[in-house]
Image 1 (cartoon, rainbow, N blue to C red):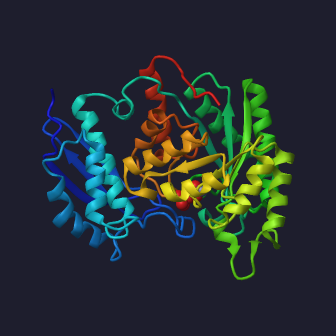
Image 2 (cartoon, rainbow, N blue to C red):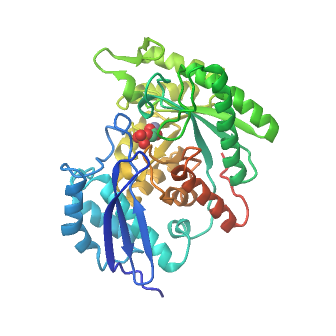
Length: 417
Ligand code: PGA
Ligand code: ZN
């Protein structure tokens, strides 16, 4: 038996894709290692209810705690005992939501421990999380046109205008289709927006001077063309990240680009119209992250034909997800490990969701690193989709890893919906 005892942990700061300084750790066993650098949500887009990224004093304070408290406690632990290590991290923090050490600090350690264990055992990480076969490939949900907190200047109010190819034969084909749709949209934008100069947002989605409806129309046109050529279905979706344009004082959603406000009821009607008109398969964070009831109404009215997805409202948090399940607020949820601070925490929330027939969507952050762990989580936890952008090294790192995993599996095994 190979020794999976943690022998050493190194750490440093590096930069994520937006250029923000972030924490990277290396966890070593005698014969293996795992390296993870933390991703980061955009200011104005990170969820109010997710674990804070770092200690109250910031990244430096987190690194001090890492040096003095966390590393000495983890050395000598067995990297294979993920739950025990995650419990230890939770106890060392001692607050309900990693307020003391930060969700990023904890999540990079938790994930690097798993990577080190898999590396020591010479198995792919997805096999560490689920040993008994039954692995499945998620459909890639690609961000095509961006807006909101992920872009600058006049742009759509909603944060992400997405597509997902359904019924593709291989992971590689699915990824390629998203790339082709992205490319086609670029060509259409050149015609539609005279000021368009090929600009992209934090996740490499196109950004242009459009309303949300314009953006959906353009994506629709591009998706139809590629779907016909490829003989597959390409469906559209949205992540509104509605917290960013919610005005709690006036009780309205402020659409700056459109120059309009919408009450929660008008927002509900608007989303319903978009779902019907564009045959949307996915709507994430259509309301602010405190409004379980509007989520539930949308899910009640449209959940049979569109996945109503909870991101900032559930924040990968077990208790917030449990409340949402009771209220019927969503048919799908986003899982981001650094929202809850550990692999085990993320897994428990994902299991709760699946036990109540919610679809799980494993997601990147807008500020990303080359880490590909979420590809493995998606396969091991049978995620229905992975949200990891379309273009850019840090986005393709996850998608390319799924191509490798597909090769390891021997044949494509997309999840059944
Ligand atoms: P974030 O956005 O990573 O900037 O929080 C992604 C999302 O809202 O899904
Ligand atoms: Zn989101």
